[in-house]
View 1 (cartoon, rainbow, N blue to C red):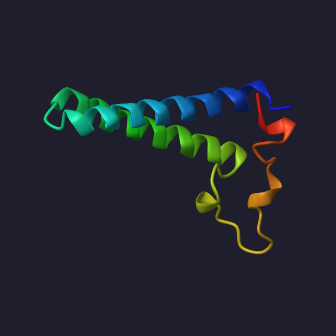
View 2: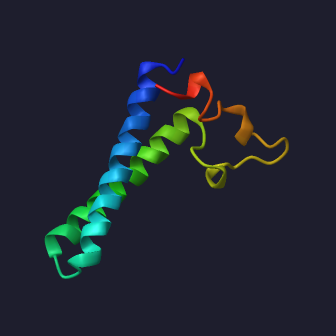
Length: 87
């Protein structure tokens, strides 16, 4: 089971990523909107900071973020379909 602090940090990452992606879709149709571009840059920075905070505390969220050498440590965390990985 995922502890509350880990769950909260993961939701913060997911929320910032989702919002940044949503604003990017808006910018696809409104490329001159300065307000949206500013909001997008802020959300991207927030998502990056949240991801770094989570990975520092709990390990990489993606294989590309893994600094693992040998043995390959990406598989040490529960997979997304494992009960302990979901909330």
